Amino acid sequence: MEPDDKHVDCIQFRVARGRWEVVCVGKTKGEVTLVGPFRRGKPEKPCADYPLRGAEVERALEELLLRLIRAASER
Image 1 (cartoon, rainbow, N blue to C red):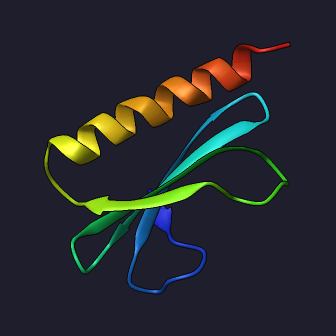
Image 2 (spheres, helix red, strand yellow):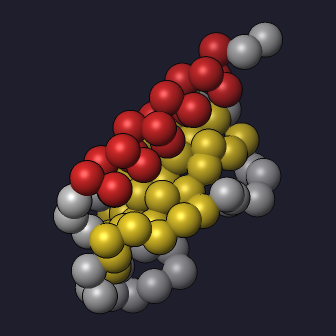
């Protein structure tokens, strides 16, 4: 966990595999922004907002991590 790069009142964590990353940003308004996967040093996108709790964000986080694994293991 670390302070968000762009918002003072938010926190974020990053998951990286090789040069690929995803970012999860928790916001005070009860939302989570999921970003990636993207290559380190490239634009941080795609991103999408979800409610902080619930099945929708759980599915989205699961899919985000699967996309990270797939992107990092492609050659």
